[in-house]
Length: 102
Length: 102
DNA sequence: CGTGTAAGGAATTCTGACACG
DNA sequence: CGTGTAAGGAATTCTGACACG
Image (tube, rainbow over all chains, first blue to last red; front, side):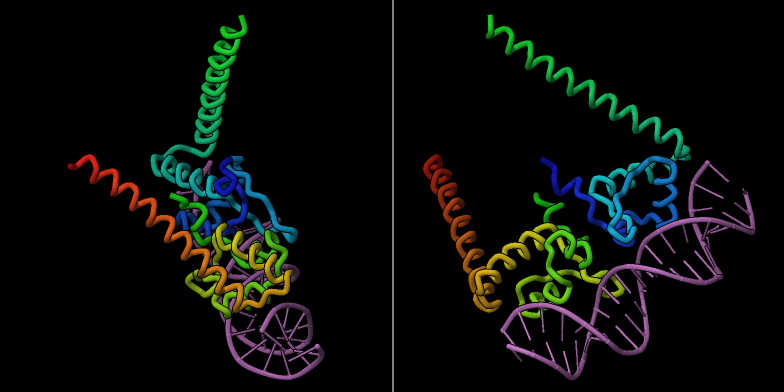
């Protein structure tokens, strides 16, 4: 569905232009497990638009003085919330389906 | 609206991976006025996802033996058709608006 | 902990040109 | 006309490390 948003095609130099973050910082956040670029055949990192958005979120939190480990936990939490929300929506759909069934 | 689709962020090497076209061909189609990449500060070409799609269209037509000049004319025609279609839709909207007005 | 930087090497991109056809 | 290639230079990216704090 969001094929363009999630396709990893942007090199670190362009990510730098887009986010203002240095290549050093971008690589460091990767080493801390906050982002997960792919690689070209010869090893160059490739990022998606959603990676770029995530990096801007991370930059904001870093400006607030939040440490990378805390940011990681927050990100995991956000994903957990999204999963729960999706499960609830799915649950509602299933409930309606079952109503009709009987 | 299609911000990710049209944002120029992909380097020629990745475009090559995505389309299978050589850098030489990609640059040549630019010189023939079929595509219009942007440049980074130091002159590296940057393409959008819609450029990538267009290049695949171009590749198909080239395989049929169509020359770049003909392809260019076809592309201009497609855009003309789209513009006309959009104008007609706009015309319908205006007509409905005027109906209500009187 | 988070970021800068100098280091050395490898891979990328750019342009203009010659080649073939 | 459309594409490959060798050429030379400039800019990019990568990794591991030292520095500061």
